[in-house]
Length: 211
Image 1 (cartoon, rainbow, N blue to C red):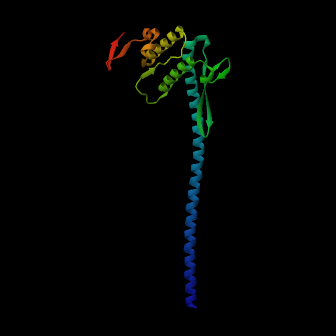
Image 2 (cartoon, rainbow, N blue to C red):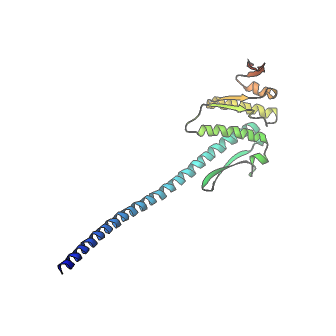
Image 3 (cartoon, rainbow, N blue to C red):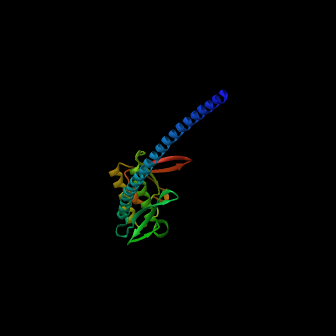
């Protein structure tokens, strides 16, 4: 009889210990659940804030880029210029930018529906925009290889070189244009501060200062 009571007491104490352990585990899991729910609420709020900030940043970049590239196009092409448009779209969970030219309310794809001279000007203006937007800028040096080779007309080429010169002065940029000897144009030479002619003589490069 005494042995049975002892076994029952031991079994009861064991059950109490297991109950207390389970209660501690439940309390710990309940606390973790509350922390997880709290973290989730903060994460949802933070994501909402980030989305608002991202949209505002995208809009600011959109306005900045559209304005500068459109200004470059208008500087060179005047009344025949396209406006430059940027549309941000969410695809596959990532934000992508679609680039368009616009004229008279109609959007066109730059490469398939416009003159390549406009693409040359827009491409250069985009390089300058991206450089200006960089938080840690590289050296203010642009090396351009035949940058406006698709531009047609002496006037357009003169305006493009004038644009380069003004950007160089206003932004403190050093712009180096590389051109094949056979394609060197007088407008480039006239608009440049310094001109160097590089020739190979017996396999050795010789540099002549033209200006």
